[in-house]
Amino acid sequence: MTLNLGVIGTGAIGRDHIRRCSTTLSGARVAAVSDIDPVQARAAIAPFESEALLFETGEALIASPSVDAVLVTSWGPTHAAFVHAAIAAGKPVFCEKPLATTAADCLSIVKAEAATGKRLVQVGFMRPYDSGYRALRQVLRDNTLGTVLMIHAAHRNPTVGANYTTDMAITDTLIHELDVLRWLIEDDYVSAQVIFPRRSRHARADLRDPQIVLLETAKGIRIDVEIFVNCRYGYDIQCEIVGEEGIARLPEPSAVTLRHQARLGTPILTDWKDRFIAAYDVELQDFIDGVRDGALKGPSAWDGYAAAVAADACVLAQRTGAVEPIVLDRAAAGV
Ligand code: NAD
Ligand code: ISE
View 1 (tube, rainbow, N blue to C red):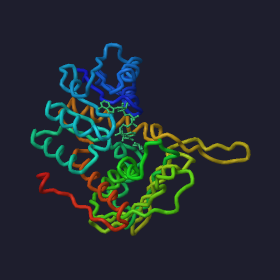
View 2: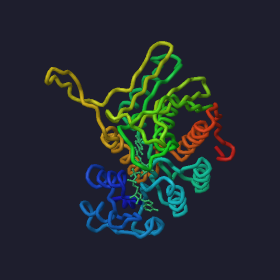
View 3: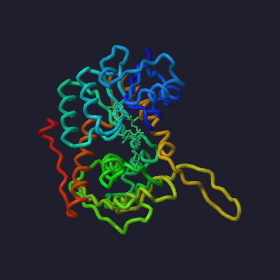
View 4: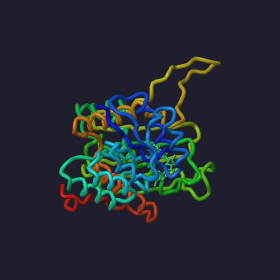
């Protein structure tokens, strides 16, 4: 039976997920949409599903019997309320990152889901579905590098919108590394510090860019992540793992090597939608299959909470300049 999805939020990623659910993935269709901009919502679904329902509010969409499962792709501050409404309705929900904008809200989602006795929530962390990160994790699981000592990572965007703020470098951008590095090394963070290098002249005057985040894990692994969202030259994701026996790097996206006009090179992507296009496909297909099989397997509400706790500490560290502790409240979550 085809799964009827309801999509809340038809901005950049909402439209991209509508396209992939309608043209690329199998087992589901977009049966309903909602956005505070109804004209945009109608335009987003029109090329794919002429019969899709348009709801005035996300809450009405979630309550509709025409919707079996929900995709939350609206602005971050709206996520927690929609995820809670989906859990209360007993409907599986895929929520784009962040699960919620505070760790406290993530924790309340963890508890609400646990109270239902089943998994209903998948968080839109797509990097664990990327073939490059998966290959890297296999190297670690095979113990090829021996004990992992350090990780050097970078998350570079060519540019960001006018509403992007200094703390969003953590809550919107670094949050991907906070999730995927924890998943890679199967370890939890214990502290964070943020350092501000010289500011790029391409960054707005009120935006601290670039930033360097220093993390330490329970096993003592030290991690540095450069966040640079006005790097100009492309969308560039780097990750190098240093072990006692060797070093492993995240592969570059595959591209043709071009000899042209006395130059040898490969293009660098510029848009996040393209860099992880395959991972988004695999991630959402996994959600659809998981709902249909009654067994979600992707990033959980707990993963969303763990990333949010680390993000909160990083935002605090931006302000204090100090090394801030990262502590997961397992007792409160009941895990
Ligand atoms: P966007 O601004 O392009 O779109 C957000 C949409 O949400 C807008 O159309 C807005 O009208 C709508 N919206 C806001 N409040 C709403 C409400 N109460 N009900 C219904 N719709 C509402 O933003 P975006 O880039 O598409 O990002 C959306 C979310 O997806 C964010 O949480 C962002 O962090 C996440 N995101 C994830 C990735 C990824 O790589 N996984 C990439 C981009 C964005
Ligand atoms: C955006 O919301 C994303 O999730 C992208 O993957 C990230 O690279 C970008 O920095 C965020 O703003």
